[in-house]
Image 1 (cartoon, rainbow, N blue to C red):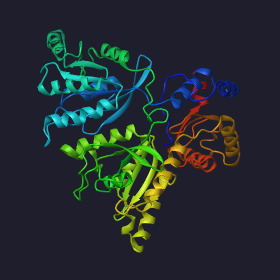
Image 2: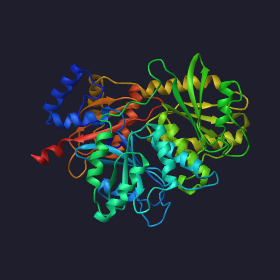
Image 3: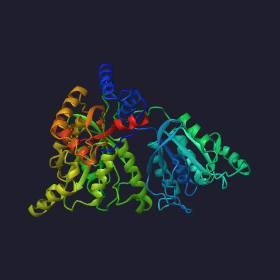
Image 4: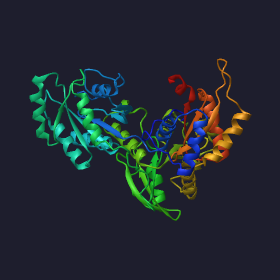
Length: 488
């Protein structure tokens, strides 16, 4: 949560108004920060996520090798066998002074549902989350039926596509690359991801199709329904909850865990408002350990979370809080979504189980004490009326903004009362700060030295005590003046 955040464009005011921005820049100059450094910090923290580039293709065409080449370092796992990458992995990259995210996806494999279904599930996720796509084809093999199936999905999605003809190690392979014009995706760009040949030209083309500032995907526009993702491990009662709030059976419910494969979007009237609920497939223990349909269901769950504004995490109170539960909550927090925790099957609790549950919540879910809690029963409808107020509370916290003047008065009092511990003979000090963004709240603190993680967690706790922020993660990034000083 409290990490150096890297989101947004290079320069900008975040969400500061012109007058507040001018006052803030004057304060920064007095403390020895130049305009470029401050604008960079505000731009990084103040805007939506970086543009996303998905690298897609069938197994063993060299996607992870290409990702490593784009990053300029060995990050993605590479082996000379298909199917090594199973999890969706996101990295931050830079080319020609522009930053963007690269998503390395697993290759498309045949499974019990057949090739078309598996290709669709993986491709829809990768494309849906991306602003542009690099489609990697093995030029030495040529276009296969699987490649053709992917092309149809890419056309349907309408996202910009750059065609990468990989494994072209020399002039002799240029003819193989030219054959890929037949895919109908425009010019194939011959590349050797292994040796680096042609990757610069490929990235130049990528920058042409990636947006400078990504569109904000949250919400449904002014007055549109807020998006709520129901997430949780299999058979925790997500579909039952959706049916209960909808007042009818809209989703298949079965004792067999994992009945839901695809996210189901439903417009539902609740608490006098229309909400868009997304019922998602249950998340298994680890995505890369699951097979076939469950693997793709997990990816689609992640995609639904990325589209949502608030995540309602369901936890089955009849069973101990598990690693799966905490992992799912972490997914929602890492995605920067507002968070509500709904403890389902509350009607099944006896006194002994309730005693142990409260202790499990205290120890295993202590890191999200700020999330609104609702004790519900999807079966009986118990406390369903409390769900909407909890969601509204979380969304309000998610969109809360603290004026810069008020924040700096708070920081001044905090530093005076609780200074940072002395380390190595030095005592770093927070000089000033601002809230550069919301949804979730993002703060930039300018300091005289490095702030330890424990002190940043302390700052977050005090921010919550002072300003609320109930139901939302908080991102805190720190800019250190010393770094600028060493360059002089």
